[in-house]
Length: 283
Image (cartoon, rainbow, N blue to C red; front, side, top):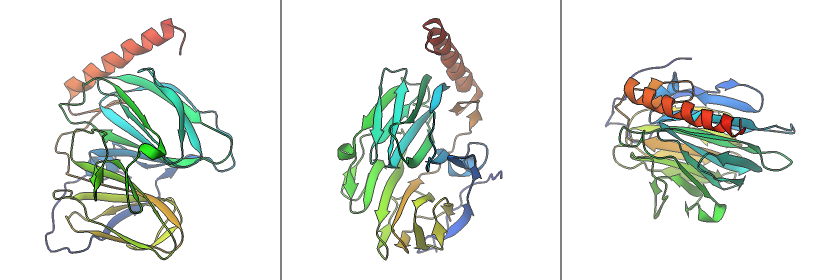
């Protein structure tokens, strides 16, 4: 599905309602819920979201591949993933940890399963604004202890309640990972100006707002109103909100930029890195 449009603020809305729901496109262990060419155009700076769930399958992982103009954010609810990138970072990301890979003007990364057994979580892409999209690559990997929390929410990116993340997306946005027990309720009040809001469920089922189950991505109507959530069963989900990005999306195979010129710069750089990796027999 391709969806384009603009965000219009309705000041009369007191409680955020669901405007759109999707289950994306399933490709085995990965469900693509949002891409830059469809819902990412409406939800930017959030432009891409994968829900990964290995179930009982063994996975081989993904070979090194390039990005530019974006930051990828990986959060694991269950199991562990392995990561490596051309900044020199590598390791195992456990449940509750965050892998932050800010590609900037270009870098390569890869990964796969970190241990035997089920692995479940999300990988999100954030489109970087013009003053960040051609910056230096950055890799930060946070242990569960390093991810700040407030109540049932862990602050992956942004600021919520009495805590905030040190990760810098270059724009005003929040990305939270939340766990609720059956029957628990929680309300999220986005910061001023966060007209964009969405939520995706990893496990369980929510009764409010609307009936939402594992594998769903829901998009809320544009407003600054709070979002009231009640869990019908034990549930884990991610929720994002942001000031709408006003720049265009210039799309490459692995890159998202704000102009054709910056896209060309980023793609030239990732080609150069790829040539170096091949010369070193790392590809």
